[in-house]
Length: 254
Ligand code: SAH
Image (cartoon, rainbow, N blue to C red; front, side, top):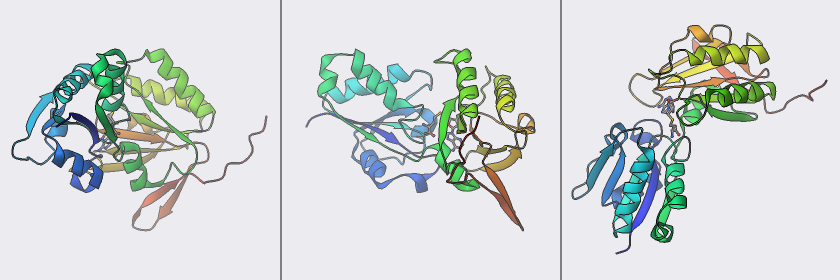
């Protein structure tokens, strides 16, 4: 039997969001690797070993999973959402890029999942209906100055912006700074969607405007979508508002 590593996206929440491909990759695995809370979402299989790790040790976790796969085992390494979006797939590619030559010969599969941005957008309507981008506000792997520049450039260019990792215990104030930067480039009425724990217990969706956004609660389980100047909110009787970005953009003048 030859080794295999599947980097598997679990989607944003419970088992409803798992694709058939992901379910198969998990069922077939002899060993499961991943951050503890993600592993807890995967149903137990007899004979399958589990290797939970800390969320911050991504490269170490990737190397351990690759080593195990190289020994001839079928390994699944799990990520929440999509494994390619601020998650394990890039860490695995990085490890293969810089690691032992044997890792390049491994059967590697990246199995996509529904990323948080898409799950939150779907709850609100169609805020990503026109051009958009995603920015992680975590400065663990990049300087904060880059984040500030990208926020300004993205807002100025008219992108709807999905903000991953909006706050952490170590970064209680940066989200407020981010909204202040965005307010320099966008109207105060710009719709902002807060989606917390989407697809899981305690899901919460809130729509506010950019001027109010800094007062809205957010934590590490929250994904924020900041509209563009084109994004619209449609009020509905006895239903939450619909937020969408029209498919067509007008010519930019000036
Ligand atoms: N690979 C993941 C993202 C990892 S970064 C994905 O594709 O979704 C972690 C960030 O993702 C969190 O700080 C939060 O911003 C967002 N996130 C992950 N799951 C979420 C969920 N169920 N609801 C809202 N945001 C979520």
